[in-house]
Length: 115
Length: 112
Image (cartoon, rainbow over all chains, first blue to last red):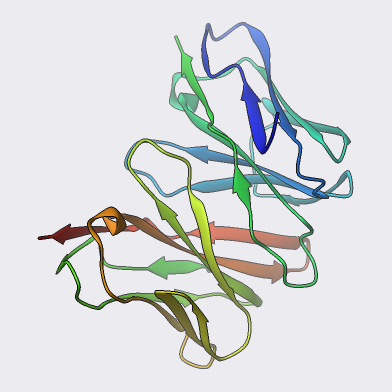
């Protein structure tokens, strides 16, 4: 596979469930990102990892827990979510967050619905 | 605080030039990004500016003035496929690290 892949593409979960979103990039990049996109709201950057180290956490609630075991994989663990967390969750990668090479490649996203 | 403003919608004619403005307020400016997002698709990176001036990439150019807290995205020779939302985002350095904040986006409609 090439580019950035995300699984699952669609997820419906109850507020008491625990689930995980997975992102994998096949581009040899060192930085990975999680974004949230809700209807009629600006795109929100949630987390940034560079060389497996978290470099940004944009005040995201603790019910979202990121994990980056290596530069190719990024997870978002979800637990006790709220209906307002329903959104499109996008993963992206780039060569690095430093040095000015910021071109990011996005995955297709996971459409999450919390019931 | 941090704030990003850009127009909600713009309409332009195929073959014309359109300029999408973005103004921002940050305490520790560390770069400005422009993304394109077609309806139902993921955003695509267009440009990054961290120094004042114009960055040109094909039909698209992006300009930055840090002293004015101002950027614009210039699209030349508009095509119908340029109909999309254009997102301005600013990276801010604060004591705890970096934060990237997005504007609400400008929906561009290109008409024949």
